[in-house]
Length: 106
Image (cartoon, rainbow, N blue to C red; front, side):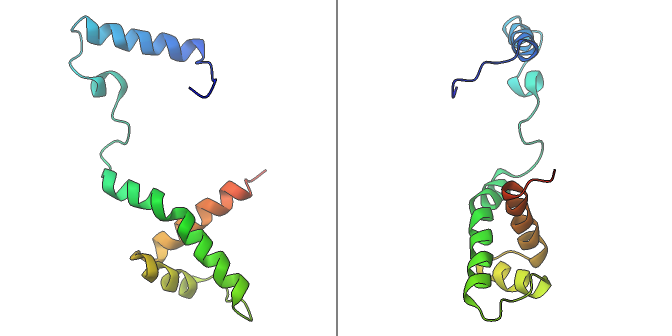
């Protein structure tokens, strides 16, 4: 996929797990490979994924249009979070995840 070549160690692990399922040594793909998201709720993960960039964009827009720009603080996160139906802590977390994507630490 995407022109990527699977490393040999990953291919070996995949084929080993596949053989164990095919030979009835293990009864499920989750047992063979593990649950992809653990016990987390998919709906919650999907919501976070869908709004993460939107939260970031809303904060950036506020910083650009308000004079003077508001401080990036709990009050801003609370206000923007309310627009998306999330708490200020999650709003801050989503914002900083996007910041890290744009400006990865050295």
